[in-house]
Length: 397
Image (cartoon, rainbow, N blue to C red; front, top):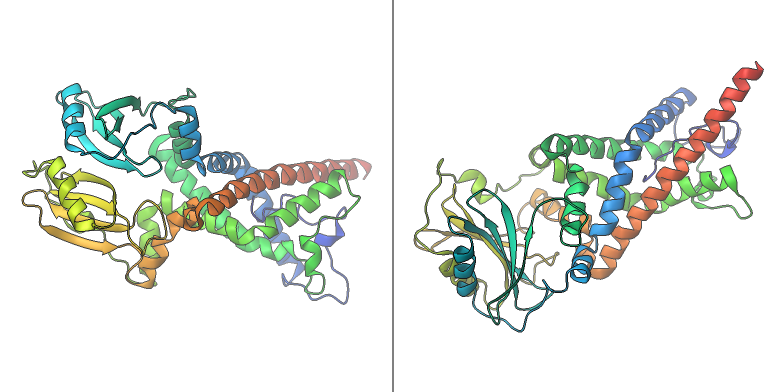
């Protein structure tokens, strides 16, 4: 895990111990270094399982679209672009008493539209339509499982909550915070001296066993240090969004979202139909595409994401709100515009998902997950080896 050192300092690896009489230590006094090492080691032992699961699932969902299309090709078919109104009518006919909550235009397959439906018995369904023909390709529920239909959604939910609901989601935010803090501390024990800083990035040739594990653990963590630190910080944001925004706002103003400052206090029935709202958004966004839109009943308004040239992510970052009564524009803002705090928040998802850099960025995120898993395993092996050696030394004395 980025920068995690489960080994600590000791006689087996002098590179993390005393650097010699002529070296300039980066960590200050030896007691401080020992305290940092102990804290870092124990966090690693406690958080290893959680971070391994996060890293594994993160590597998978970096390519969730490609995996989902490979597992469910029958869902992802479209003959061309067509109107959304017939699809909405078909979904309501199939699920009497239910309501369409979201409309998502699947840009990877032009003409494919998925509708998020809440049924009368409070189930969540995703209906996939070929908008060119109006044909329903298939239906997916949000049930967890390892079937080809459920796998990608299950892995996605596992990534941020371990399928444990809000309690575990909050706990994983705490893990992300601890990970970020211990990575900052890890620089103090990752480098022995200024004169020999390059050694920390090297994997020595001809080594095996403990020494190879040690080199892999330290070097891999340092090579990807900026990336793993970013993943930890953005992980705090996704699991603790309100606290994260409040912290950022203490440094730079953060523009509140429209629904956060506009609420009716009770659900409001829209006069403008969802189909008409879709047409209104298309006209406002033209010539750029709408990526998704939905109805917020407590704000009494429709919300859409649209693409334009300012985007740093392919999900569309211009946010439009229109009145559900008359279609008037209530709010129009691009996430990357505003204060330094607004821009910082806007970059969190594109960086965390790798989408800011396209296919190469997503590949880098998947690779980072593999590196984190390797660092966790090698760190545990190094810790186990040193623990065994300490026990032997204790037995001799």
